[in-house]
Structure formats: structure tokens, C-alpha cells
Image (cartoon, rainbow, N blue to C red):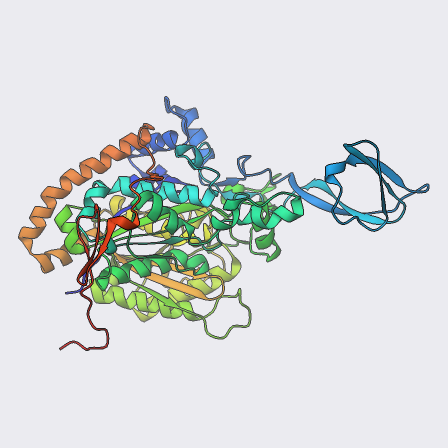
Length: 619
């Protein structure tokens, strides 16, 4: 039988907080949780945000106001006072312009019309008698002020020796470390149970690293008169999160890579991990993404495309309320009257194992990936416009759900995690895809969640936000409301859908499958079919038998205890981020190649060279 890609852990961070322990999910449904569970998540947030102490009413209010979507905060930049260079044309008056400057700053190639004379060994005089241009620093407000920012006070760079790492890589290190901590098993012990080439990592970003410590600094250096550093280019690659995780977190010698698909990137990487396990290329796979796009230039780019919700447009949406400033908390309004998406930062990582190894180790079972479908849009009029490829991915994902859990379960025990960006084009096209699929499969009121209303659009990470929220739904039985809307737009197709504006309680164990949808810029469509833990346990019982499952249940109890201990340690600020620089580095003389295998000193198993002939068919 085929290997089943089981979700054994997850971790990361977004505007709702830490993913492990389901805390980010819990923040989105905090008002629907029982008091004890809600208090645990407030404590986790307080620990993440470096605000320990009594969580009184004022303390919890601070945590509310400084999580989820909100106005950009100073740790990024002031959207009302963004620095830029103004180009000025200067016409000298009264015979010319003269000024002194340092000799070392004199341009190598003198501009036309400059006359330079020496004042002393350090200073020169410059005389200009004709029209010239110069740039002068200026400041201006930005059109967009809302963003999905990490919780205020959380700074990943102080948690390990970050050495001027781009913010996206800082979040990647944190997210991967969080996933390993949440696993509840010792990573070194897990790695020792498999050959070195049976661990894979697929991770990256959709846009690359963009801040001043990476591509942003590289591209701007000449215009700002600064020097390029040795790290700017090297750390700017879009696949660098996978490289960092292999080298400093996992110590992996296995498969690696990153599949970019714009806003569908996470699901593209999830597909790679699923296929590795299904086809036996790996037994353990870490998949994920990290995105740090909250820099002024990226806001400018998306705003110029008219893709972002601007302050003026938000005020226009609420003109009947007489607001003096935009309601930034409600900037993203999926499937309602809306005006654009809300840019966000975050990192999410999901750890997969094949079912046999998961049972053997006593790993937790949070769900399983049945399949991930990817299709392009075909010929397009506009590269940015939605196309028809998402009909294919979504219908195939629904069909896969029907195959795995049955037609009745698909109709009554499934729901949808929508891409739900909050743009007019998305609300029309995505809702129609869902509605037509629901009609075809006989689904009457299909619940639809759209969590970007809470955390914003993390671009390449978005599918991970949705997946980890879905794991929280199975753990707590509450489908998050689309809480930022009060009505459904007239052009939304909704005859067979349920867009809930209040949380939908479904009960733990009452939902069997979720369809996670992603629509990427340029025609990158992906939909994942993910099944619930109780379904996975039934499948594994049928495959491995009751005795094997009973043994797993005994082992997993200890795993859950260790995972809970990690959660408590992180909340208390006692857990360290995994970052192993210059640790256990292997040299050439520690590798021995034989005709049968590659042997690496310290590895528990050799890497087999007994490979099947790919050109011979099976009997």
C-alpha cells in the first residue's frame, strides 16, 4: 500500500501569534473558547510579546490591539512619514552656486559644469554656473497603512545569533525550530531512525528576501551611495530558507528545494513533500515558507497595481459611519464589499512523516495530506487576472475528498479554507468556483472560512496559515468566522455556500476533510485535500491493524506530554531557538564510497546505492 503523508507537527508565526500549540488559530477564535483555553493562549501571546505578568483586563486588551491586522507600527516604518528621494532641478542664480565639501566625496567623474578648487588637504570648493539636478531626502505619507504584522514585541533576530540575517530568514529559523519543538520527539533521535538521504526540506519565499539586509540593500546600494556587503546577494535567494534550515536547524543531507508559485507557494512545497513520502523518496519532510514583504517599496508596487486596500478606499467603504480614520482592523474583508488585500509577514512549517515511521516513533497525528492539485490558467488576457485553472484544482480536490472519506462525508463533514484575499476579483471568481463545485457534488451549505481577515496576506506563506488554522479547527471544533464583514457582496456566488460572520461550532471529530485553496499571481492555482486525524486513525487501523495502533497510542501519550512541556517552556521564555552554526560539520575524510553505499561518519545508516532501473516496468 502507498505510504500516507501524516502531519506530525507544525510551527511558525504570523500576526495571530505562534502556530505551535494551536495558539495562532486560538487567537482568531479567542472569544469562542472556554476560559481556561483562552487564558492559555493569552499567556502564550504575552510570552511571545515579552509582556509577562498578570493578564488583567488591560493586559489582555493590549494583546488584542497589538496582534492581527492593524496599522503599521514603528518596528517596520511610519506609513505617514516614509523616506524617499525627491529629484530637483536647480537653476543657479546671481552668477552661480558655490559650496565646500570633503575631498574624499568628490565624484570620480565630475558632473558637467563643476569647477573644483582645493581649499586645504581635506576640503575643496565647488563652483557651479549652470542648471543641474540633485536628489534630496524627503518624506511623504503612503496610501496604505494597514498590515498583518507579527505581534508587537516579538523580534526573531534576538532569539539566536542572527548576524544581520534578513527578516525572512529569521522567521524561517524560528518557524522550523517551533515545528521541531512542537513535535514532542527528539529530532536527533528521529533523524537516526532513517538514512541521511530520507529527510527532505522544501521551503522558501515567493518574493525572495527583500529588506535592507538582502536584495533590498543590494539593489539600493548604488543609489544610496553605500557598499554592497557579502551577504546581500547570497542571503537574498528565494530558496534560502531551505538552505538555512538544512544547514543550521535540521543538519539534513537529504532532498531539498523550493517550488515558487506566487501566493500558492506553500501548497506547491507541500505537494513536493507529499510526493516524496508517497513515492518513498523520503520518510520525513519539512515543508514551509517565510515571507517578509513589509517594506515601503513592496507596498508601493502592490499599491500601484491597485491591489492593496488603501486608507482612502477603506474610508469610502465606511462612509456611512462617519469615521475620521480608516478601520485598519477590518482592512481585509473577504467576500464582502471590499477594495484590496492586506499585505502581511509570517512563516509556517509543517512536518510530514510516512505512516509507518509515525506509528513506530509514537508521533502525533494532526491530519494527513491526501493530495495537492496544481493547474495553470491557460491563455490569459492579463497576467494578474484570475483564470479558469482553479476550477480544475478545486474540483479535483473535492473528488479526492469524495474518494477518501466518501460522498456523504464530503457533503456533510467537510469545509473550505478559502484563499479569500479581500479583493473584488477574488470574491467573484473564487466564490463561483466553490459554488459550482458544491452544486456538482450535491453540497447544500458548504462552510467557507477566510482567515486572511485576521492575519492578512502573507503571500507565499498563505497556504500554511490556512493549513495550520485547519489543524486548529480539528483540535477545537470551531470554524473561524469571517469576522471583518457584516454582509456578503451582491456579486458573490453563495447559493450553496455558507459564509459565516460568526464562528461556526462543529465539535471535535465532526469534520473529516478540508479543501485548502490558493490562487497565485500569474495563474498559479493549487488546492490541497487534507483529512482529519480521526479519519487518518481509521485508515491506519485498516492498514496496520488494531495491535499496531494500540502500541502507537501508548507511545504517543509520552510524545504529547513532551510537546506540552515545550509549549510551557516557550510561553515562559525558557525554550531556545534551534540554530547550530558550525556544528558537527562533516569533512571529505569522513565520507567513504563503496559500490553498495555511501558511508558518512556519525550517520546511523549508510546511503544505499542499490537503485532500481527506472526504465524497467514492474511485473
